[in-house]
Every structure is written in structure tokens, then in C-alpha cells.
Length: 228
Image (cartoon, rainbow, N blue to C red; front, side, top):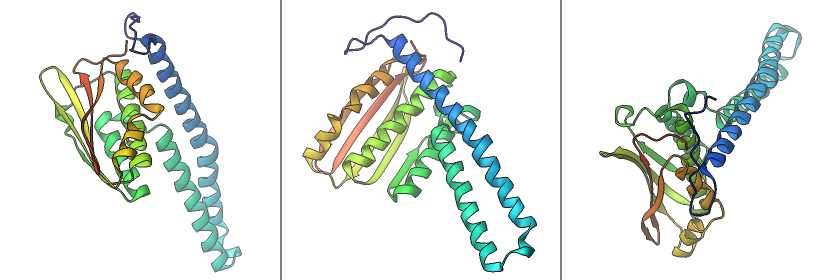
């Protein structure tokens, strides 16, 4: 990916160099895309070819066996496609942040059964460059996964809004978690990492409301976010 200007050496509260952190995130993203591409080209296409071969020889296979093989093959193809999207969603690169987040919330809702609602309008979100968009998406995905794993939520409402100088992404969580469980989430070892990701594009992480059964987290980003 093309670097944007000079890499300013800004330090996070933990003393990490943001230019190094940003480059690490983007390198990780590049590797994920490469893995997704290999899975698509080698495993996915081979299975599609196998499915077509089964269709060609179905007259030579018992009907019950043929249907079972087709079902198994179709299921494996779907699993691979879902895994490719999880690794590196093409929506993020082709259409931007909001379509990728819509897919993410729908996918996680289907997989977990948790009511995950996304309130976001594309015309309200700044047109960030690709590098900043990647970091935004990865931060939201990782934080959402942490919330699901650590708090046992019944509902998560995610809202994107913009002010004069900043964009905010809020997570309102209704959960069965106790105050102790919520505190465990907020002190999770991955939280400082996510704060570093947010800080790499000039953003901030904050807790607006914290009580038993409810939690509200806020990610804020400047409207002109760009990796440092």
C-alpha cells in the first residue's frame, strides 16, 4: 500500500511509535488478504470444480449418495467463502467502511444469535483513505468480538455519527454481565492494543456509561483521519 506522506513519530501513552504501529497493522492486513486470496484460488475454486464434476457424473451415482455429496461440498464451499470474508472482506476494499460493517454485524448476528443493530448512513461518514478505513474496520471488529466474548450481551447497538471535527462510533451493550465482568472486559489485555490502533489515526477510546447489565463504549476519530 502507498504510504501517505512522511511517517510522523508520535508516541502513544504506552510509548509506542505510531508509525511503526501503523505499518504493523497494514502489514498484517496485507498478509490476511494474501491468505484469503490463496484460499479462494486453491481451495475454493477446486471445490467448485469438484461440485461441477459431481453434477456431470450424477447419473453414475446413487441418488442418495449424490445428494449427500452435493450437500457436503456446498457446505464446505460456503464455509470457505465465509472464512475468506472474515479474513479480508472485499466489501471493505470495493465499497468502503459502512458496507463492510453492515456485513460484519449481519455475519456476527447470524453466527451468535445476538441482536446486533448498526445505525450508520454512508453520507454521514467521511471518505477516509484506504489505510485509515482498514484501521477503523479492524478496530471495530476486534472490539465487537471482545464485547461478545466477555459480556454475554443480549443486544448491541452500534451508531456512527459525525460532529464538526470528529466522527464517533458508539457501542451500547445490554448484557447479562455483572459489574465485575464488565470491568474484566475493560482491563482485558487486548484493550491497550486497540487503543494503540485507534491512536494511530488520531482517535480516542472512552467509556461513557458503565453499570451492571449495561455498557457504553465510544470510539472517536478526527474527520480527517489518516495513519501517522
